[in-house]
Structure formats: C-alpha cells, structure tokens
Image 1 (tube, rainbow, N blue to C red):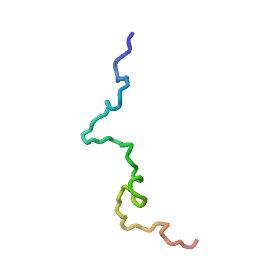
Image 2: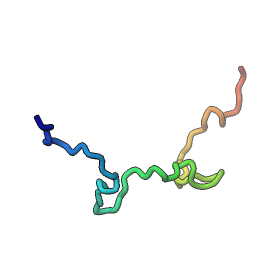
Image 3: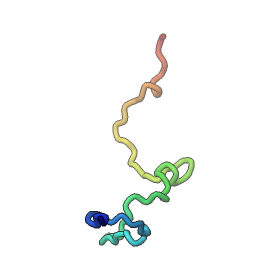
Image 4: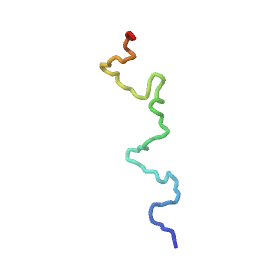
Length: 67
C-alpha cells in the first residue's frame, strides 16, 4: 500500500520561497521596529499630540483642603 499524496505539501521548504510580494511592499508587523515609547528622547516620545483644550483641573492639581 502506498502513502496518500493528496492534501497540503508536508515536505520542509525554506521560508523565503513562501514569501508573498504585496502591491504596497508592506511586510506586515515588522518585529525589529522600535516601540513607540522607545522612539525619541527622555522628554519626547515618537508621537506628537496637540495640547488638550479646556482641560479641567485634576485631583493632584487642586489645593489640599481640610482633612
């Protein structure tokens, strides 16, 4: 009796031969990319957000009252 040869291939192949070229050239999730908090310096991050408008005082910003 012979082995069944139908179905998906089970022989090992190199991963490079299975790579798919995309129209945009995207590589999906690039594992070697720095995380967002690793980009920049001590005072800045990799994201520039606008200053918030009409910011209410936070509990830590308020003066301490009687306890």
